[in-house]
Image (cartoon, rainbow, N blue to C red; front, side, top):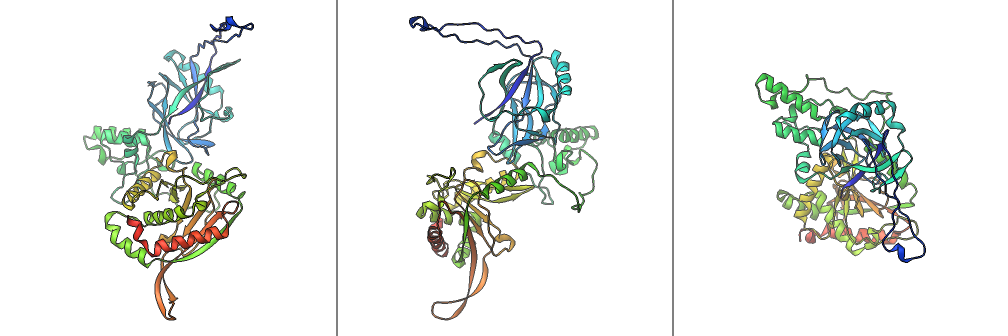
Length: 475
């Protein structure tokens, strides 16, 4: 669903005319009602920073797709904005000219603050530039609900109107936004528009040096690479947009580094979680049968993450209270869907892509979906419904050899399970002998307002039975 950005008319020469009107049926009643019809003569519009998620309070300008003075047509991408979860293209909702950019690439602006001015004709560009020079984006007032559509209203200084729309990338944009891999195995970080442009101009992004924030490749880098290639008469993919630079130095001790947008969002969520009374329960699960199943189906594209998510979902079917959530402190909800969110570490932060209806989807489709979600997460192209609809969360550090840890409960959910590594362990058998089994530790952090110790213990017993006899995972 499109999100509308608010824009305010700057009307140095605008006029407002009010004309009383009477409804056709009003003549049949004793009292008449007068309505106001407003006409707006506006030439310059402010483009505001949009709210791309419910937790977003500020956004970073990744790249300007258009330059000052460029003519814009309705539906064209103007700027790429980094929210706390993903990068999104911002499209213009009106024809006009990008008159003045108020927040440059790499700059951060609060949701609702002005980031650029849009002029209706070339004649107003200079006027818009002067207005931009006399105003500061940091002091622009942020509306109370920037993400919600706002009806037209009037004030003493002008009228408020929507001028820009933010739409999720189309399937072709999403596909091109997945980070390509160079021969060295490194991911190329580029804006969505830069990737699309590189494809059109046949530029190899793996050989382009980015000039954007943190080395990100932006559109002008791709254009420069293509231009240099044309002058030299050589293929564009063999030319860098800038001379090679040394690798970034290591961490500078004693330096102060501000949070990225995503890190700020994680920080706020973690602080919010402190208001929830939680408790933790651990359980040891034997994984010999699960490990054997994984070796058998790995060649078919099945991932261990998908197996764990499927096993968890099947256990949640039998224990719906573990899949419930309390949001208002007065009641809790038995969620109708079992959506398993899985924590993924990405550059500069953490995000939880969601495997929706994990109990109903077969393991092969679930694995394909998981790979797709991970690619989109690393490309910062997840859509809101792909990361904010989780009802139960998995956090797995087993691949790093971590044997056990505790996880912090995400706000709005009932429980999160921390999964450790499966390791060979000497155990005593029921007949009094000593044997060797692969075992893993899981620790669940739960909201004690909704979930009690006995509930969690019963859930973990069911989960252990499913993992230790995983025949139902592949059906």
